[in-house]
Image 1: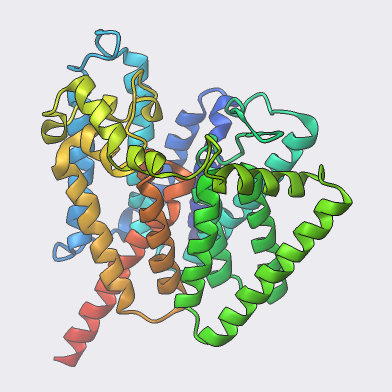
Image 2: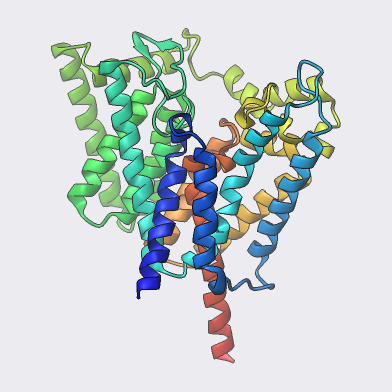
Length: 414
């Protein structure tokens, strides 16, 4: 019993530490602390590894690890935008970023055998997501937090602040996934409503164009996976009408109220075709292929075939250089199309296995991964960012349990 308590303690502490990865800007050697926690937790689970050689997910994960080793090695032979070999400190920084999330599978593979730990990990993610929203609210009144990423340009009259989750572009994806986690996992209706409301406020405060798209996707996914679709549609429509009414009412009372001004900024500057920040075909085309063409022009058209190491994701991996601003292209430029295929096949298997199980957790993994994949087309290297990818890696680990359970049923059936 004591051994189980220690194991849970180390799992939760480790998950908290990676969700609070931004503390690396505040605490010296924070990356080393995370690695110590990782290996300490692995030791507790050392005798519970039950890798099944017939499980394709295990092999795909091993191929991803081998692909990462390949990426790190070829990085030493690449030259950056200044025609210089990549500095060692940048390679070390990039290595720590690309290896962290795949390595947590050493913990998750055995840990997810306990459903309470799975729920605990999701609750931690939701809790830190709420703290991330409050960090945005705090900065609105008190100004930027010094150890956060630098604020971005203004949108309307409001400054775009980074959050506890990380850079300016992270919150839209991470908070959206947290909303789905809250909807599917939290049982208390009042707590669920309050949590989702706060997280939606966070999406508004992030002032990201993708927040609007994500809110629409969230409502669509909730509708598709709801048991009573008519009732769900009614509440979505009613909630939307109430929100519009309250927004117009508050705008007339005080247009400078922080939630009103932010919502006005994100709606006006995103939906107005005349605005430079609007969602238009040029922005979308750049994310889909324009940024990739720039990378190929810079480093050669053979780069997607061979990969160019950590340089392929540029600043997202702490390397001087450009990036495609599309996770799938980032993965391709780092490790070639073969490296990308490991992730695509993994996603397909995760979807397939979770569709075969009908419970709240499987619905969460399907919905969150749909949202995650869509955001990958406009976000940089999301598979390796802790707060955007934690649910994806958790779903991968849990899909092994689906495989094991199905295999036991087939064996018993014989």
